Image (cartoon, rainbow, N blue to C red):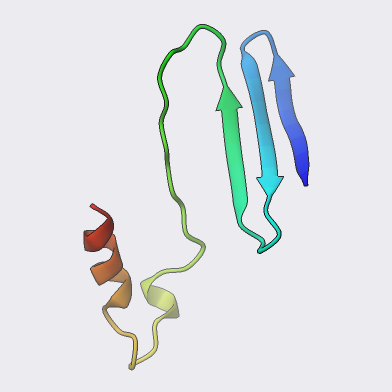
Length: 64
């Protein structure tokens, strides 16, 4: 499912929700020939248990 959040001469911002619930936000800016990717995760170290302590920090280092 997709919905346009903003549109105008400066570009368009669109939100797409995949079947698994993953949200993707895309922005189209006319005249630009580059791409950027950002990842935000709705979870973090505050959601870790004693068993998973440190896994968020480990994953961060694996991505960078």
